[in-house]
Length: 250
Image 1: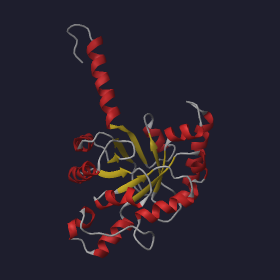
Image 2: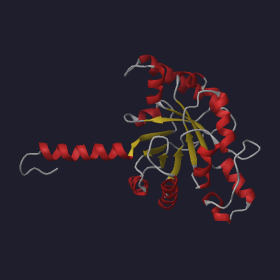
Image 3: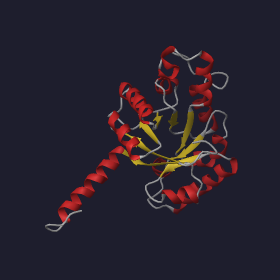
Image 4: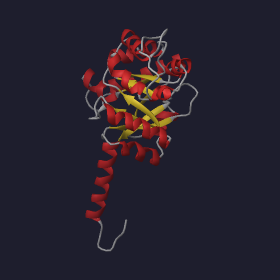
């Protein structure tokens, strides 16, 4: 999720079940986003999911509910490899997110090596601090017209690694109807601003993931949610069973 890395594919985790992370890893996803903004996932379950992800070889990110220190401290201490911070509409808000997530001198994050991020007290303090500032990915979500307009400046804030364009909240906040040409044009303009500034950018991709990567420069994509994947798979099985002719196998 940084410049120079190959494209990454991920999924939201909304079920409060660590097995969702394991299943996504087995399916071949590169990362899982544990969704504590919209998912009914408590802190204990989130911590377990992060541990399961590390054990299964899938990168654990957490979408936090906000940019306050309390929103970010626990997932960071639990060992999340990165955070997605929603509703960042301005440079000032981006800087606020950096202050909460990064250690001094970039930010004001509280330090404690006693959690998973500090190897339960084993990690030297300097390595722990360096990892928090250099290795943890901070991805801010652009989900409004002002955010898209300022996306180049937002993504250039020191301490931010990438920007994620959220089309659903953009449509709601901007009052764009489904299939809006204006919204599509604004997203394309934001993509160009990110390319001009060398800012890694991601989004949701329900269709044409290859096109978003190859033709539009996206470095990471969220292909859906565990809830949606289950519903779609279940619907396909039911439809196939109800429409199959006697003796036909599928």
